[in-house]
Image 1 (cartoon, rainbow, N blue to C red):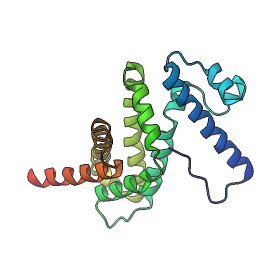
Image 2: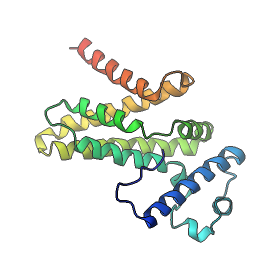
Image 3: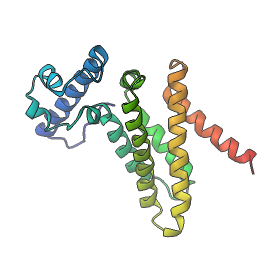
Length: 201
C-alpha cells in the first residue's frame, strides 16, 4: 500500500513518508532477490542509503517492514467504518469501508508479499496475527459508530465475519492469478456471504 498524503502535510512529514516508502520498496526488492531470511537490516539500510541506526527511526524489524502496509490499511478501515451511517446494517458499513480503501491498495506489493510468505512458516504465522489485528480494527470502528454495550456481541460477530471474508477474497484473488480485480473479489465474497445467510434462515 502506498501511504496516502495528508491534506495538510508539511515538508517534514512528506519527507518522512517518502523515506518510509523508499525503505519499504527497497526491502521488498531485497526479500524477493535474496530471500527474506538471508536479508539483513544492515543490507536494507545500506541499499536504502541510510545508516542502520537511522533505519530504526522508521522500523524495528523486517516483519514490521513487510507488513507495514497492512497496519496502515487497517487504520484507514477503522476510520472509514467510524464515519459510516448508523442507519445501515453493520456488515454493509464494513463492506463499504473495505472497498473504498482498496483503491489505495498496492496490488503489486500484495503479490510480492504473498510470494515472500509462500514458503516461510514464520511469516505465515505472523500474518495470522495480522488477521486478529484486522478484526480489532473493524471492531474499533464499529464500536465508535455503535457505542452501546448491548451491540457488542453483534458487532464482534460482524468483525469476525468481515475479516474472514477479506481473507477469503484475497485468497481467491491470489489463487486465480488476479484475473479479477481484488475489489471485485471482495464485493463478490460479501454478496455470497449474505446469500448463504439467507439460505440458512
